[in-house]
Length: 104
Image (cartoon, rainbow, N blue to C red; front, side):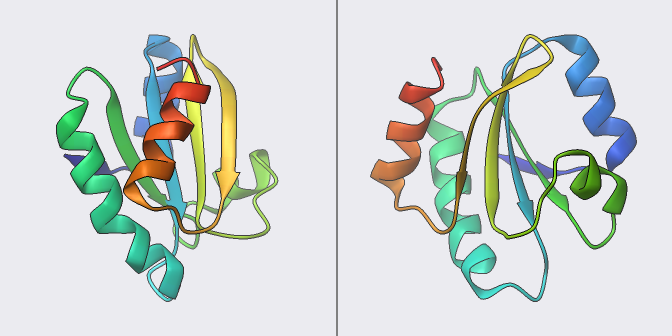
């Protein structure tokens, strides 16, 4: 299950050093809306990985911190650091490939 979080929860996840995947999105973004059910489906297959999403319009400080200029941007984090990222819509297989490339 993909949980929508705000900056404070995002920072807590980073500090926990756990593996997680973050989908940076906006409600007005068509490709973001298309990606959401794909991420939801993949998250069910990987209960050991936290899947979260952050609305860049409501959490501008994170968008600035990570230099997010385009969305959807999916980033993988491990040990408190970003280890991989990809921009744009992905199919389920592409998300699985992204996870594998990220060492998940």
